[in-house]
Image 1: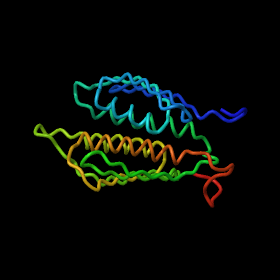
Image 2: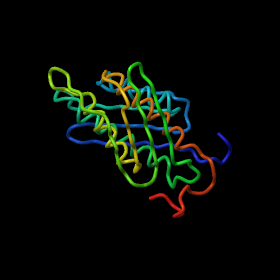
Image 3: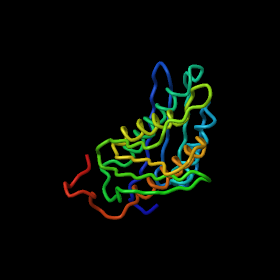
Length: 199
């Protein structure tokens, strides 16, 4: 880290009657993660996001997973969005836009980002349910909505092909890491907006 360069780090704690989530984030990290979460599948997804984004993430999360995954997955997305929003500060110098197209066996996923100050989620992925009616993709949508809303960014996910929900979710998190890594790169000293600020 260059001398006098601002550290892009944040700590976020969220406690509700349903969940408790604590996230420590270093944007300019080495892709290291320490995930303490009762949801193994989503811990795996967050580890992928951290690795491919180059972000250091420490996460402690617990919640009412005896009900289902929904509340905890959503609140992790909210907290992660808050952490990036806080760590980026005034967003001076960031590239702002990021794109990735990720193949995962039969799956091909596109992720596009604009850290614009305006939250929007474009989610062009069909909700695929298993025989019991559960859907990982539905919870993927809730995570991405919470994340994009609290980071205040445009986030678009578009599935070109794919039918395996594990592959769809994995390609989404890898693509999110790759696209966000590009979007938060420091390229200049000013703000990447003709308005003079991002909000």
